[in-house]
Image (cartoon, rainbow, N blue to C red; front, side):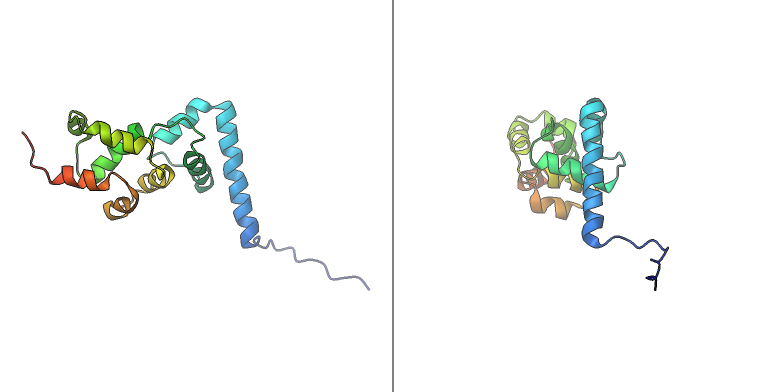
Length: 147
């Protein structure tokens, strides 16, 4: 007697297999960009509005968390975070206190969290939960303007 034929219908892989496939897809894409198109990778990282696959986004976030990529958070993330707090980055850039904010941002351990949140247009409340500059930015937002 022969055994029954397997169903010809494609079954979705189990959760673990799906996650592994997504992980490997992101890592493979990131590796190709790092090796073959580093300028494109740099542009992707700095353009928070540029669409990308979730697997690549997560791979980049892992590298940012481990400080494996050339990335200056204060240049890319701080201006966007300032706008979340209804601040004008150009006007704030003239304030001498900006140097302290840039320093904190540059060494922040939450750079990957911030990058992902700002890419996903997270609300101010969410950003305030992880940003070490949130209190200072909120203070700047409530200061009377000099103009």
